[in-house]
Image 1 (cartoon, rainbow, N blue to C red):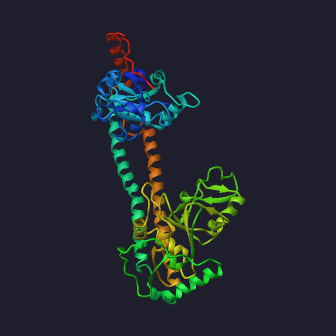
Image 2: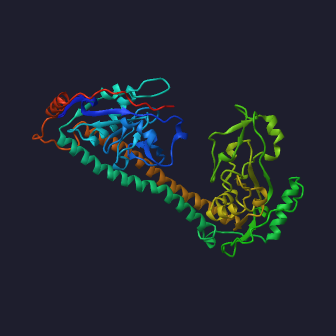
Image 3: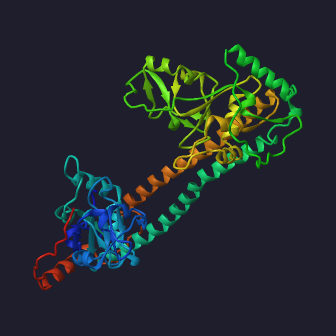
Amino acid sequence: MSELSQGWATTRIGELTSKIGSGATPRGGAKAYKLSGTPLLRSLNIHFDGVRDKGIAFIDEEQAAKLDNVQVETADVLLNITGASIGRVAIAPERYEGARVNQHVAIIRTVDGVEPSFLSRYLASPDAQARILEENYGVTRQALTKGMIEDFPVYLPPLPEQRRIVAKLDRLSARSAAARDLLARTTKLATRAKQAILAHAFQGGLVDGSSIVVTSVPPRDELIRLRDERRTAEGLRKKGKNRSVPISSAVLPDVPGTWQWLTFDDCSWDMTVGHVGPMKDRYVEDGIPFLRSLNVKPNAISSRDIRYIDTDFDEELRKSRLLPGDLVVVRTGEPGVAAVIDENLGLCNCSDLVISRLCQFIDPHFAAYYMNSNFARHTSSAMQVGVAQRHFNVGAMSVMPVPLPPIEEQVEIVRRIEAAFARIDRMTEEASRAAHLLDRLDERLLAKAFRGKLVPQDPDDEPAEALLTRIREARAAAPKAERGRRKKIDAE
């Protein structure tokens, strides 16, 4: 800041505080923590929006006694001084009176005439945060020392203006927090809206069959004949009897009279599973894409963390090669999640996925959207096996019920689902952009506040320089504290 506002003064944190200090971690680290006792505040608890209770550690009386020199008092400024969260700052709430801090958190206690919340907000401002990142040292470990904190420059306004700034920022922050809460609900509401659309779609409510030209769905026997002809044409041997037990308790919702309930075995000319077995040392840097469960998202294939195999291994795994239009369903991890293999993906292979190659009378995207609906997910969940890790296997997929409208209606249903989902996605993207703009707005408000441009100034306020003079005089007149040996705590 090139010019100070009227009545402001330049100083440093060391002149405005009666204490700056950090603690230690008990010997043994996390193993030494207790289920109850004295709270030990760590960097994971200190956030810009306050001290968070999640992950609070506790130490016993003996451990706490060794950290008596870093007892937290209400309204202390708590600053993260190491690691990736360096610079996060918050005010100690009353509920943590008497807590201790470890070596990653510094207690900064202000003197009379300096509002703790003002200093905390000041340290959270963009200019101060930029300086903190410049001040830290070390190539692999970021850290602020006590000396760095003491020498940290502060632009100090008169005390009444400090209070006006804090009050204004509190009001604006409350509004931002309320707006963030509303925006955060958007994702949950979007998920619920999508599921409502799917429920409506697969009960025949999304498309009026009379509004489009459709052919009727052939009888099940005719569909089975078409499926078997395709199996024969592909040279597949006759499938053995499915040994999985169908869900007799499943209550299938009513569907329009032109629809019928089938199973995925009825609709698939082939159904198999991706490679199941060890993959150690089988991956290569570049080659044929090899999809795993983590690459299958609802109605989409993710290329994130994709692996590759060589052509020889792909030849060994010919049965699990993926073709455009194949429906792939996750077996483990998130069992039942489904997507369609896009023709743009090219030649690829997979592991631990159920692969369903569908007949022409069922649209694969219709099938994928159905599998990702709440009804299908609940049904598939009841069909999973395993104790330590749940599996959705080929047998379960074979007897999985699926509603089948005429193919023309399936295509129209998919089109309308995709259009509705696109509108919802645009809304969530706008909410995300709005949340990002709120972050930028908060930063600009802080920057404006500490340039003296957020609240009106009062010429009758005592100048900050006079306040600093009194603080210095009080410090000079105070008796010198006797230096004792600092209590040690075994650190690790």
